Structure formats: structure tokens, C-alpha cells
Length: 97
Image: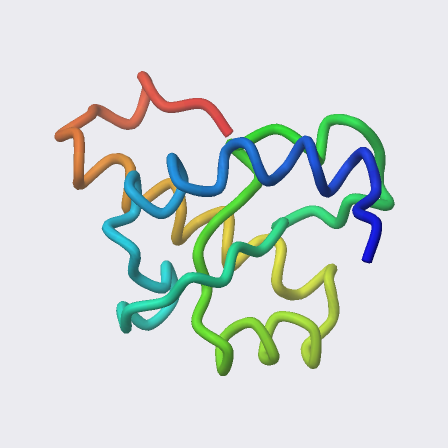
């Protein structure tokens, strides 16, 4: 199977993202290797940024698609932000989306 250029670009950050989040689902905390784009790739080049990607287990990945992108974006961005703040002991005003 031939990968799209976007998918090839995303693959280069895969290990970094898994390591950053401890290989655990950002929503429920169970181990996973699935990486999800919070804002879909179809929304443009900015969605390819590693800051737009989080690990999700299969069940939470299915949830993110079943509730719809508009509903899951806010939840997953908040989960990601909260995790980064806790992990690096940051103050709220030092973290950008």
C-alpha cells in the first residue's frame, strides 16, 4: 500500500508522540499505539503539526469518530493541554494550543 505524503509526514513524529504521552490513551489512560489527529488532516496543513496529535486507544478512537469531529476536538484538546500542564508542571499562561 502506498502512503500519502501527509501520512508519511505524520509517521515521522509517531514515536515522539507515544513517548511524550507515555504510550497511553490521552482520554482513558490505557496503553495504546494508535495516534489520532485531533483536527482532521482534511482541515489543512496545520493539522499535520505534532501538537495536533494524541494517542488514543481503539475504543476512544472509535468514540472520537462516533461523536463527531466538532464534539471531540474540544474534549481532546483539553485532555492534551491538561496532560502537558501536569507532566511538565507548567502554569496555565505558559501553554498554548
